[in-house]
Length: 415
Image (cartoon, rainbow, N blue to C red; front, side, top):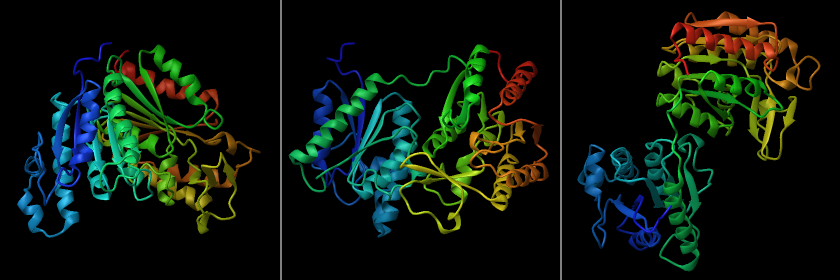
């Protein structure tokens, strides 16, 4: 492919009143590689030395406000939220209209706060880069990260250009242009099924289900339910990207309930239901709370059976009452669904470690969870119990039987 001509256009966003040199350097690197540049100023008080393609006034108006209103409020936080709303709206429109193919945002804490909103407004597959002095910081909550956002630390870049920050800026400029050129955006050639799971050592149904569903004409995307995977799954469900979901690993709900940083946010297990997407749900790893392995253990989870996956991740076993709470929460969220919902309930357990005699087995707590699911299951959910474990072939066969029934009834398209 010949990149000698301007083949992709990158939206370069930042406060041009204070960071004109740095933003100009980003644009220079992109143009030197044959890319096009569209500029957006998100300043409030000052004005850039050179005009941008989209001024701060354009941005504020896109957010339903004005620069005058942002200044008159005399609150820098509220002012930046006005600009964030406008920048997100304007960037999404420019991308949808084909004006830009990717975005790069530069900032400190203020610019990063805005950048998170802007990137979250763009679809999966649109290259989105944030160059920030606080990249990878615990200040940034996982739920604000777009599913495929990329971050680069703006090292040595707080004030002015230098050789240290140029190393970061030039990498970021090359990365976003390269991504815009190389990206293969999600296809809609076949109906897409979204599935949640973990690795094959703990949950195995995907090994049988993925090829079986592909034989039926579906494309299958399996999401690793460790926080960001669930975020991506929910975002795509909200967009209506899925023909159906097989949400078999809802553990991120438990993580959020117990305050774990490994969270997909408070709305996990809701987007498909709101969008009317057919759902088959189950109980993969429902009994575990995943914690960041290098952080101190919360007091209420001390002295519990645990499994350390690695130095990053440790799973703690919930007790019977916590599992009852998990069952009620799952049922409450499924009750809000507007499309068909089937809950597959394998009464012998929900992960490889909780099999009878397994290292994390607790038959009484499992029975308490099953009883609570039976009691709390809402009327809109079809509950299918099976005397099997989630990793048994009978579970996968039951899931396929539901899919086949939906195909026959016209709920799902024939592939």
